[in-house]
View 1 (spheres, rainbow, N blue to C red):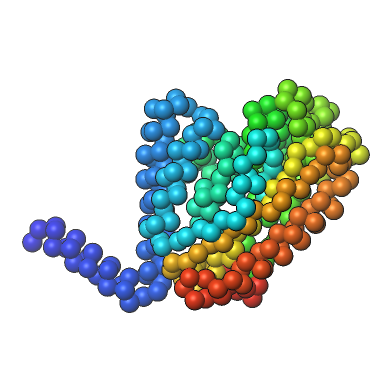
View 2: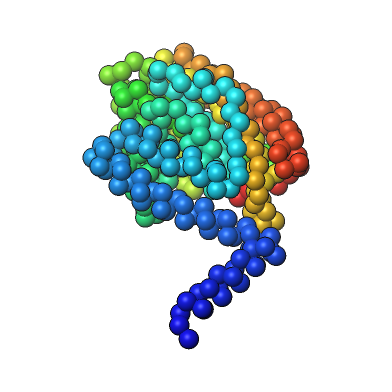
Length: 327
């Protein structure tokens, strides 16, 4: 007996399992999503290299085109309100909530021109996905080396102003699993306040940017890179020094729990509602104002998240604060 009958039988069995088992359907869709990420990244990388020759923010238009096609495979729709607020012609820090591996689709749906992300360095080694992130200009942070992280953050601020970039940050620091927004980390807010909205100027005070040990003599950042970095920043002389700053633009995605839930192995079609909130100015603020700024942004985003997540979705479900979001 040849190989083809066995392959045909295995395929038919897989299709039967997908039809009968919700878990099988869930893992089949997640596997398809991962396969699309790898194959799409590979093809996009080739096109990026042929068109632009290497690493540049201009590659993001190619990358986003590929990722935006993924939603058709899963029956997803994005309803974005206030998109024009992101189309500004000056540097800014964009913050949004972080829910699951599907966030990349939501990011690319709303991504404005000349916008890059900050990501952990481990993602750089994820094969074609890491390569396409590198080619798209993503800034990678090594959370185990404080000196490297500080250098990268200084470079982020300098390039943001010099090259007129927008920087997209997930201030929760990790994917959400509790049906609400997690407390925010301070990094994005320090970055916005300390940046100077005029090109060709220093973004950070030089004494802060020099490689130093963390308080207590430690050289490695804690698990929470943002808090460790900003704690060092505030204790090394930046506190109380006002700067022109760049605005913060909050972006809120509704809960995915009406169509995607990792814990219950649920993955179906649905609508993601997205709201872009008004820009929050940081001009004249100092790092002493970070807690208040962070709290006001968190409160505004949480209120919006709970409101748009209660809106009935296409599949008839209602996502609310009691729902369990995806991992």
